[in-house]
Length: 221
Image 1 (spheres, helix red, strand yellow):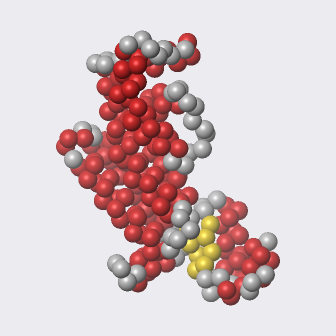
Image 2 (cartoon, helix red, strand yellow):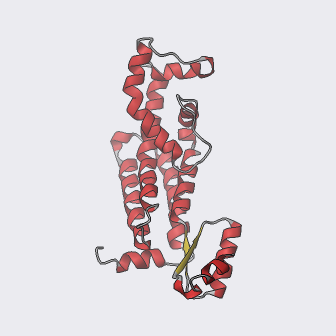
Image 3 (cartoon, one colour):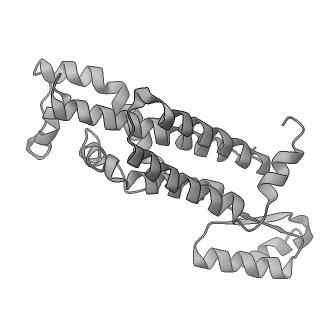
């Protein structure tokens, strides 16, 4: 099917082929490369970063916070891309208003969401823990979510992949190493492990070194 589509404009008009890491798409990419050996194989950076976000949401340190977040004022869909991070940022912006509205009794949660009431009471321990975990999550995953939005642009080129990965790793390193943020050594180890695995899968062990080569050849770099 891919070759038939490429034949409409000529196979050798294509310089590269990209796929995610699912079995059927990787096989399709391999077969196309066998037929058109001038194509450069590439991995789907947005897909890999989305899986990175998914893996981070599964950490125990974020489990309770995300559970409460999913019970929130508006339901979150099941997609794992950067939806939860966007929802977390939106909630963080609304926290002062929620504290005020619930404190004054203007707003009340229904029976199914009564557990959320304690999260938005000023001075409550569970509320403070929730806010800390919410802040941790946004500081770690926010950089990745923003990069996904940028890399989904139609003007993105292969050099941008490396260009965004570098600040993602640098910014998260600053967040984790800052004493004021209070991450434990176990938290830091788990987050580093997930990020390093994704980085290596895409940029070190990926199908080609095109992202690093393009970054090195980019004049503005």
